Structure formats: structure tokens, C-alpha cells
Length: 64
Image (cartoon, rainbow, N blue to C red; front, side, top):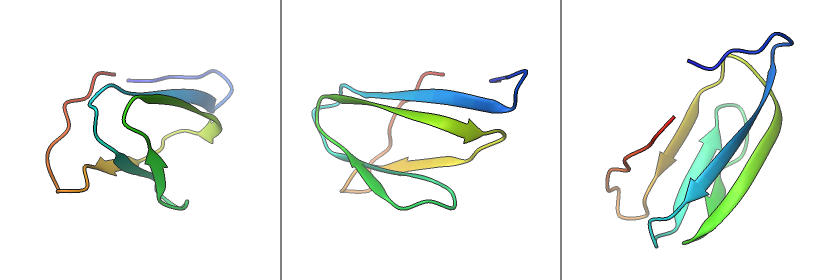
């Protein structure tokens, strides 16, 4: 569970899979996370829903 006293968070996505990942914060555009890259999504209101997938539809193991 992620909590914030102010209702906004910064979420860091780290891709170490060697594959391109497509992700979306629900309500926003689909974006691409490169094979070995990091992106920070800041100013997100919680709760949020984040979806992501590999181009071949494969599963992704995540750690929060």
C-alpha cells in the first residue's frame, strides 16, 4: 500500500526486463518504457490504477 499525507505521490518505474513495456496510468495516454530505463511519474493523485504489458502480451513480475 502506498500512502501520502498530501494525496499526491511520485512513482518510479524501473524496467530491467530487456523488453519494451507499454504502460498507462488510467485516464492518461499509453506510454512506452524502454528495454532498460527508468521513468518517474510525479504529481499523481491516489488512489491510482497503473496498467502495463509486454508487446507479446507476456506477464510481468513487479515489486512495490
